[in-house]
Amino acid sequence: MRITAPIALLLANAAAFAAAPGVGDAWRAAQAHDPAYAAAQAQRDAGLAQAAEGRALWLPSVSATGSTGRGDLRSSTQGAWFAAPGFGSTNGVEFRTSIRDGTATRWAITAEQPLFDLARRADSTARKDAAHSAEARYTDAQQALMVRTARSYFGVLDARAQLEGLRRLRAAAGRARAAAQARYEAGDIAATDMREATAAADAIDVQELDARAALTLAEANFSDLTGLDAATLADLPEGATADMPAPDPLEIWTQRALENSPQLAIARLALRTAQAEVTRYAALASPQLSLIAQVANDQLHGDGDYGYAEVNGRNASIGVQATIPLFTGGMRSARRHEARAQERQAQAALDGAELQVRQQVRSSYLALVNAAARVQALQRLRASAASRLAATQLGADIGDRTTLELLNAQADAMRADADFRHAQAEWLVAGLQLAASAGQLTTAGLEQIDRRLAAADPAAN
Image (cartoon, rainbow, N blue to C red; front, side):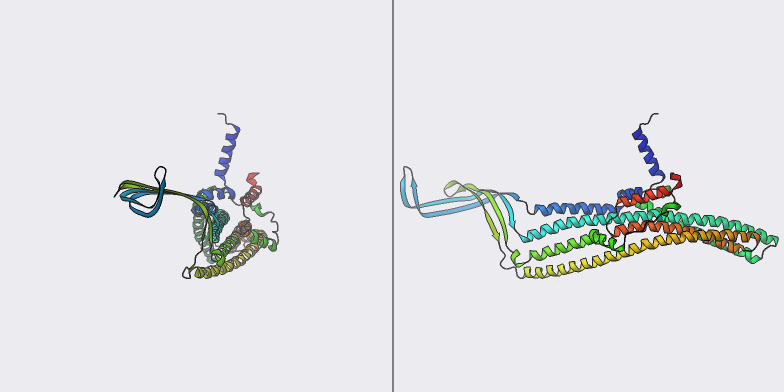
């Protein structure tokens, strides 16, 4: 069977995705699978429609009306002056028209173009700001999902490393327990040493049960979030943090956050909307000026006191219409006070959001720096624990160390290795969290992690 190059490439990509999806793959799957993200997308789409609503408020509007029904008419004109060709002219003429239960129809077409209306301007501003706010909320939800996906991804790898370490430790404890039992039966060690080895092995069995449950839960959470099979995730390579470049100074990250944070963008838009509401109820905002054009036709016909009659009237007009409220019962002044209070509230909320963003950036920055230091410290601890384990193993072989001391050294080496891998994952996620705090997390950040994982994985080379 011949397979063309494009099809072969697609098959290769599909096989790689199914075998070991990266963080970027998990993020793309979460986009199509997470209900909270789908709700954020729908909210953004609804918000974008409000931008069109804001523009439409200042565009001309055209409406058509029509009606039909029954009506009566009785009119009388006296003292009129009448003139017609062949009839001459005369004064004191009387005209009468009567229609009983006649057919009445009316149609009209009206066009209106707003010229000056600060209340309409406030509505337009509010709708446009709502659209921008929806976009900022969507960006915030997008970045939050990126961080959540990465945490879930590395949560699986961390839980798997914990369980694998306990399995190795359980196997070593089983061998140590068997050796202690044999030596006890041979009379080489006391019963205490044998019982300590047995108790240590039983304790590891309990820890393994807890670790297995933790891994099952982490895999289920990852699958719920992304719809992917967590069993296909590749283990975290040891060289994933071989180089850890120092982040930019905290002041730079803080400035980035103040300029790009979605939370601050939302708070600023809320303040602008509140300021527009204050303008709506200002004293000079009450007049409304519009250009109005209308054409209408009215007709009534039917039988009356003088026989069949028909009355038609058609009018067309164009002009400027001004509306000025004279008395509202105190409604406008009350709403003006309310709008001013809401403006102060929005300003306070913006100040609080700015403070919160500063704190988030500071916390994320320190978490990243601390995670890098923990990786380096745990790398040294892991080497020390391995050296201690080798020395304790030698001591146990020649009888200078007890079985319990050997098991403790093995447990410490296992914990040091698991803690090191956990610190690696925390450093990788901390970088994403810092970028998200500054509103600068994009798919490029996830792809950078995938490149780091691929470069550090010996199986990828």
